[in-house]
Image (tube, rainbow, N blue to C red):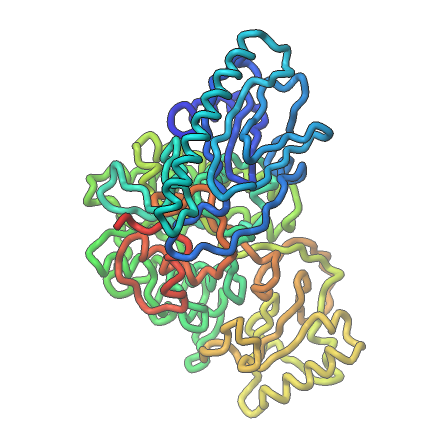
Length: 577
Ligand SMILES: [Zn+2]
């Protein structure tokens, strides 16, 4: 169900505040409208997880999973079929409404897509008219099914890769190649970051706009994996350079240059700190335009990027989110050749609230709803300009969030019987403990003493902190190859915090910065646009892959980076040959 009709239904449902029924598993959205006595019949294509292009190789298909009550309720729906329910869903090959419970079971019996019908519920105060109506629809359905089954058999016998039947009733779900642009004359990528948007926040509240992007786009099924340390500046800069922090130089939100002792802070804009080539630089280097409405590193003049006044906003957290969205939308009112082909848009929420109250608090729910409203405003503005389907929206976060509380503290002063850790050695405490001991004191000796103390059983929560020489950190963290990384790194367990000494302050809140293998540090990845298949799920991946994804969509040459060259072809629809 695409186009005007669908949108009308959606907005009517939104206005009435009615619950939406979402067949989450297949990213098909169905809206209930009980005020409509004789609803029209809609053909909807189930855009299943297996709907990937024949080339490149798709991710391994997940096992068929019944759509459980839990999933439905997460998505804000409930089902069926009670005599009071005016509609039923029918799709002969997929949908089996259970008669004994309120669950709807969706089972995959074939790989091909099958039309899904929404019909008036025959048990719902029936009328002769609707029986005739249903019968007609069923006859049509059977005829169409037979036709497509025939077509499927016919074409699969002459084709070696029939994972998607070549004939479809609607072309919307037939996605073997990228959809053509209809209004813009060049691909445009809008990269949106919602700071600290932990994976799973999208289920805290209905978030219809974010879910619209998910339903009609491609999502990292279990979230986007941040880089270590899971902090704001290192991650935002990894997203736009494709480099791990050891290689792009922003190894922490603040650190000292080991040679000069100079301090890097989040307000440092000198190019010497910011290594690698961020996307805005890559884009302008090729004669195209880029714009940044806030992003760590965007104010830095690097190569061809001069942070032009018109397209580069200097960070100011007090600018209302609405104003940011309005400005980005205004770029689409420019003459075609002036529209930046790469744009960033940044929101501080829900990170801001997460630190204060932790991830499980009504304040977070409200912040997520606020971000969703901004996505809705953006979509509306793009639709008004007729470019929503042309623009590639990539929505990400930089990291997740986990609750912390004062019972989960580790104090460095407690290590005094083994070694005195001076505050002057410590560059950052928590969750990334980074220590540079003075010259003359061997880092390996400090590590040994600290671990001895922590493992002695005599230090409060000692077993939740492990100290490493940076060269001995697990290689998956990629956190060794930079002089800026202090020689001693402490890895603290999820939710624990390191402090120098005991104080009276009571603290409960949220933090991030932990091992990037920790699930609570994951964030979201949603891609929506001509090269992203609708309703597709891909396995989780690290955010260093996004750089190549963007250069691939824009069809421009990127700089060398830590992402995989072949990654984009596993996520994007190929351009028609
Ligand atoms: Zn952040």
